[in-house]
Image (cartoon, helix red, strand yellow):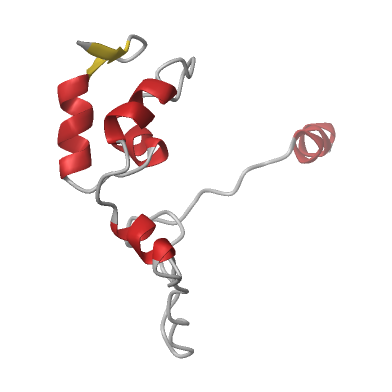
Length: 105
């Protein structure tokens, strides 16, 4: 049966994502886009997820932090490439004002 009509996501697909570790509607949305358009399926997704095992939820119930801070980057490390592609540098973008000044000159 379809849970999300907007993206054609079925109950079985939601259960598969839950079995792979998604335990909140937001995580299901990240995995399948279900719940990201009209939102009418979010309650149904919550119902399918129920109160089953969820590592983050279990940590919270034990009073442990669910999220921990990532370690600080090494001070001497090179920053990552901004484009995500090694060696590819972004092209400079000319503003409309700069373009007009260049044309007028």
